[in-house]
Length: 310
Image (cartoon, rainbow, N blue to C red; front, top):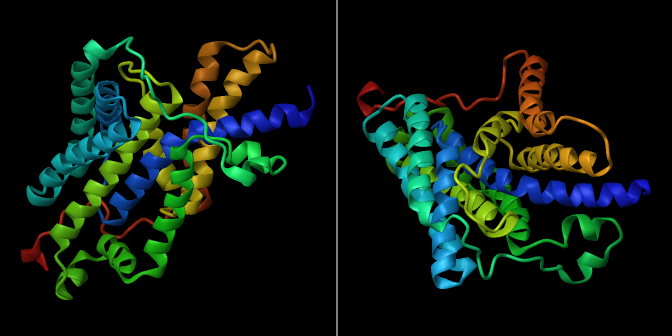
């Protein structure tokens, strides 16, 4: 086997494996840019996965399943928004509770759907002439529609955040909500919106797992990807392009474990399954050490806002 024959399938698999992490990370990135930490990404992804799967199986339409996953993810995120924005509960505790809730609730909803296949999952859809470009085509343009949407989403979020007035307001919202309030903008309303949008993207990440990556439903099928997405936001320094690269990097580590087994390299399967999470910890240590603890964290991240304290 030549290097190219090994590398192209590996990189293509990295894109596929990284896509659900990318959606979840983009959602968390938007949420944290608004000043809210949501550690419930894992639970949101699971609820999105089971909701999308149930609707897709019932209606036969993966697109309706995708819509259901977005609505479900947004709805679960709104629980977190109510607790942290309106009631000003501790954001870390609320997020952890949301993960526990999402894990149990998704298992309850999907219990009768275990073993049922999806008739029309998202399938490979080569992207015209782009799919025929040597090396680049097989890696990036021979996937399903949700992968292509994720490409566009990164561009849209990046442009929105750095080249539009609402995007400037979003970044300011996470830095100094009191200043935004003084300008006449409704801090609570905007934070609700961005938390819901972040949850909807997390729901899509879950739906990708159950409707495209492995079209089926299994309890806890996210297998920690939500936590990797949270860590990826720190690795990406709250930048969509870095989130894209980081998601594919983690996806590549995940895909590499399987291919090492195919090549006959003797390694414990438990060690190979552990690789992405070990890599996550190492990356976080590297990023924090490189910046000596001075990350470009939004100034008001994790802090409840009270108008009376302005």
